[in-house]
Amino acid sequence: DSGVTQTPKHLITATGQRVTLRCSPRSGDLSVYWYQQSLDQGLQFLIQYYNGEERAKGNILERFSAQQFPDLHSELNLSSLELGDSALYFCASSFTTGGGYGYTFGSGTRLTVV
Amino acid sequence: DAKTTQPPSMDCAEGRAANLPCNHSTISGNEYVYWYRQIHSQGPQYIIHGLKNNETNEMASLIITEDRKSSTLILPHATLRDTAVYYCIVRVATGANNLFFGTGTRLTVIP
Image (cartoon, rainbow over all chains, first blue to last red; front, side, top):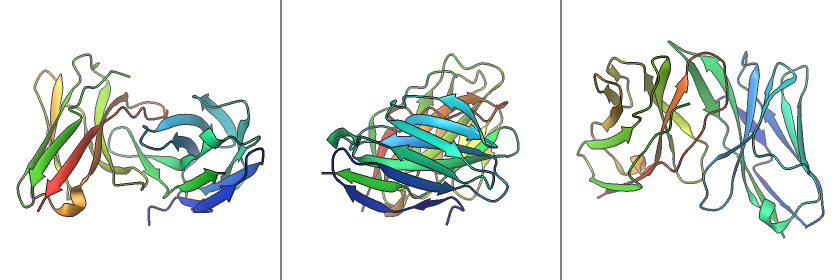
């Protein structure tokens, strides 16, 4: 158990629908990062939140949005879903460690759009 | 963050040492070398990181050349469970910014 909790583990939905993925960071970690990994593709950074505020944006589509709540959990909202949105979605939180930052990843949510 | 170059794939016999190279010739003085791995469809897992000295932990050793332009991750006694994609990432220490994952090296441990 990495300490980063993602729910649900699996999600199957139809095209055009909207889903919400949830992430709880490790206790005490203020940053949350979202990554997308399509089949046989690399990990693509989507967005980062730090203590409730958006810190950085990557290759995130306009149909996707995220937020981080006062209790530091984060939600990634995916709307108007397309077949190509089928992927693994990972959340990570960061912590300081002897020089630099460590990143702990959750086990991911597998989204299948049919 | 500096760019890294890794071989796309490597094989290693079970029980032998796996040596995974990484080239980061444009690394800056304040950039650390991080290694992560991703076992099939699981979340990436932190392995080790270092600045300029060699580092060792319970998982692996990290050897960084004196000019810091390349490094090697060593898994001393590879097991089948070490089969994964290994990512070498270079980034600055300050600021908890996102990690950029390249294509990594797919290590296959062979029985």
